[in-house]
Length: 168
Image (cartoon, rainbow, N blue to C red; front, side):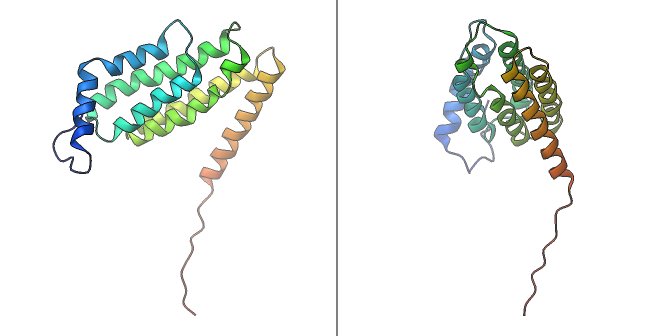
């Protein structure tokens, strides 16, 4: 699960704990928590993502690639379930769209650029579902997220101004 060679920057305790957690099927259990039929709160999913963020720096690349593809599917499935399930209260649904930028950052940090870019496409699809909802607050939320995504894309495409240091 965790690299043991050439990993002088990280604590031996962290590496040992990550390996132990993996052997005890901890990562699979975290994934299963997100994909479970029983609804878990957005805060819990956010904490699970934070665990993966902390592990990313010490994890073996093959482990990261295999697990993070499943993590991506789990989080996107979780968000789609929230959108479609009308029995989940509005308070429990709050801030679920915040999971997408966290997921994208996690995938970028793990150097899974292709998967991170897919999150943007999946985000647009999710925002569109909100926009097409029969509820006004969901429509407004979807519209705001689409506008934000467009704004972010435009700002990413603008060339960065080069600054030069000149002495007087």
